[in-house]
Image (tube, rainbow, N blue to C red):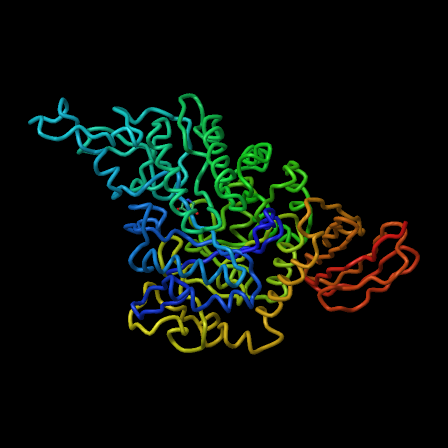
Length: 554
Ligand code: NOJ
């Protein structure tokens, strides 16, 4: 990989990938690392810069790998460490980077640390025969379930408490997620040291960084909500220092489903995370499109603090989880549920467990418009596997599994995903989204497909550095149904126009002073007409335009 561009992530297009669902190379019904290797040409052709792999560690898979049972190995379904090395090499040879999920907050209850931690010390055990476990302190234990009562429950649909009784230890243990995911005790220096070893192991292997899972919850303190504590930030800064010192150019991406003001602290002064997801923007893209009103997007970006120059937001439309509605008001949540999840089976926790295309009832205009917003608003965009072809979801499957079905490569019944009779999850079989209707091969062969539009958007996005700078200037065009903004950087200026409404709109807006030469639509390569510094356009329902303004003279 090019070593010189240490800020590569600021203008990268990320692709979130579920290895189990991508491509099965050995016919066992599960996607694997060798399978992913075979599809790297596809990803290169799509134009993405960096893959984010969902957890690939050994795990009992109670939370699809976010319950890690061994941090130093690969789940046998996915292959081996050698396969992973080969994958990294092959990806790097194509100029594609790979970051992996790293779960810092908790392990699986099957992790040997937890199993050992449960054992009683000799004084506690009746016969005095159990060895004292040095691992007891790796987790957070209590004799009551009344500590840290201000901490909210995250998986509200399944968990009643953040404490679970362990009969072997004779104590309660603390967990912010499922009860099978005990939280690690970061007050223990041994735990803090373990994480450094884990980082070193994978960075030595060549990974380009980590998507750090659930970082706000590392430490617990009484009389707080146990989120975003100063101790947590101090520790994360140490991790960052370690990465910078020994592995420059590798990145840390922060998963903190919080308000931008709170997430801001995870960037520190450029000495904590390189990137952080912008969670609250995502539901507001859906809200703005549903209401045909740009206000929610504008509002949340106004709430978004400036971040250090070398940092970047990561933006997304959908991912492997439910479309979270934690960062909206109760009234807004009800509105979004009604519009986008009318069937109760579509709802999960405080969110919506659906993919992008079904959310928009497969309306190509809306899907493209959502991508237009994603690619032109501030932040590095992430595409969720399968959403580049408009894959559907399976509401019959429990939890979030319905958005993790096999990638649809071809129109065959197994979607060209695997030769096995039984797959880890069924291929979609509904009329609208089955592989016969939605698959990669057909879309690649059709120049007018969603896939080709996405490929073009990615290429254009990477060509214009104005899209990777932080600035956005809203332009008044007389109606809030059309989101018009300018992105400018180093003399390059783009004017982006998105019709959020289901009706045609006439847009009139003033151009920056001094524009005399031609304006070009960079998606269609057509000129856009203007007179006397005024741009006047007619937009079809949900139409979007990306206009390049000429360099200003003087
Ligand atoms: C966030 C992950 O995205 C989600 O899939 C997981 O269940 C929780 N963290 C717990 O690790």
